[in-house]
Length: 528
Image (cartoon, rainbow, N blue to C red; front, side):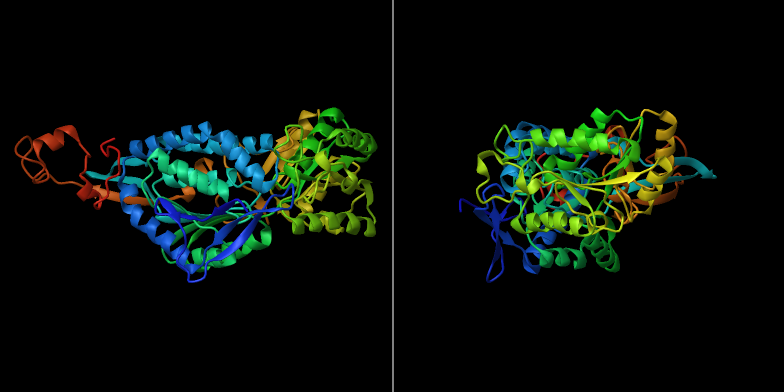
């Protein structure tokens, strides 16, 4: 074992405060070999992280918008500079190929770039003379300490969909990443420190349910963001809400790709392979159900088969690899089980990924090649369950009406796509489909950072999506002010307001000494 990962609390590594520190193994998915260990937090470590964030909040809340934005800009540049390093860290622990991991970092950077413009998005409203000499205005203010609980499949991107916006809005953060691939979160914490973020504004605790429950129940945590499976999202939402917290909990998915008879089948086959098997299917936006018009289904299947035969499966750090292993042995075994259960329930195993060759032989890694079950029905477990692996299910429908009915009947509503050359059909699909994110001839419709990310139905618990303006809304609360000012002296004579110095009134200076910031030297101007 070559590495050990611990928590990051108060601007530095934190070895733990429990009498007997619990640890978990970190495996290399390509070999199955244990590559290191990670400390697991309990209530004591979570309490220390929340306390560090609580103590850092007043000074960070009071820092000027330009000071916050300056730190965000520096963080963005550092992540960009270290993007290849981050991609290799992700690949080593998750298993995805380095190019896929680099794309993950790039998508996270887009949200950091969006957060750099936060001063524009934190403007309140103002109405003059709502009554005689009475003004009314609104002020968006940060919540305080917020928690982020994130999944193994995107150890950099999903956290970066949360914490740049939260921090830019003036909050402090406790991140609980997946213990399966924890190193990326700690590296991001180090880059925050290098960017000049004050100690305690960003903290990382690793752990399992014990750590999550401690965050959900802690009185000083004001909001919780989560991405994961639907059962856990439902639990996070219910528990956090019961403890008086604001919650956005993104759950599971069963993303459908509807292929109509007039679609470009070459493009549709490319999309099915890349969206179904990229990152070994371990994506909440992966296409897992191809809904094909009966008249083109056989043709589409053969085009998919030809592409799968050429797909190179291998270790993430091998430049030839296009798809890596699954994250753990247990997850690989669970996913592979759907191939057997699908056949038992009446599906046809058109492509068996268990026989797909692996570059270098695979060793003891957690391998399952791209697979496809054909003639799947909505009653089969391979359709009703979120498989979260490289298994496509093909369902056949007569037309657009039947395709829409099938998709809308599914309890999940995360992402979907339609492939067609008919603009009227595409417009009807986007209007009638009951799904939060829609692609038209685009297989994975992940919105840009300035739009919101989130699904409908059992794919979202809470009323706010992530990033974009909805992210800003989630991480702020509005204060409404009604004000009337009366002159303290005759017009044109003497001081107004009783005691403001002429120099201060003239300059509008917001400069503050370290003592005025609670004894904390922020390390940057506060006059912004």
